[in-house]
Image (tube, rainbow, N blue to C red; front, side, top):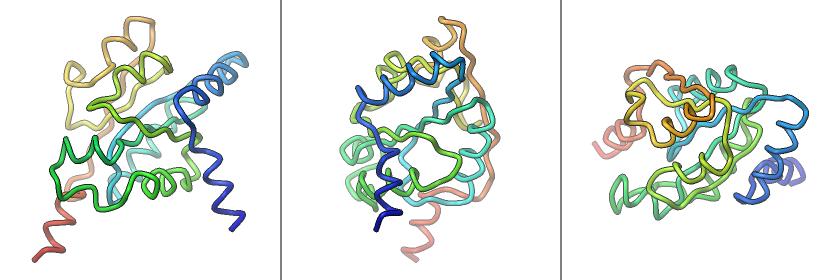
Length: 162
């Protein structure tokens, strides 16, 4: 059980994460930020998270709350609850910190944390990404990761229902 509790130590509240990031920045380290529902983890997620981790010294992953996922994806989602999804993401070696957010998008969280790099999938354009304008305004950058075709949580759920 101690190995799971070690992973739980990577899951932060918003305020605690803000303090941790301030410490990283004080030592000259860079922070990348990405977000998502991560309802059923698949190869596309792993590729994207690994690429995001390569953009900075530390990778922060914001996970949509259950309420937020329902609002975005419908009442049948999420399949896995927010604590389970956060724990799975925290267990990944390339992830340094996880935070759950309840808003429809992470703009306010991004404004609070001020990462050096904001990373999203290539299925977005920069002007569609919540927080992109803010990150660019203070000198950060926005990176679009290529999408691995054929891998999506919605596609997995559809195949399971057949």
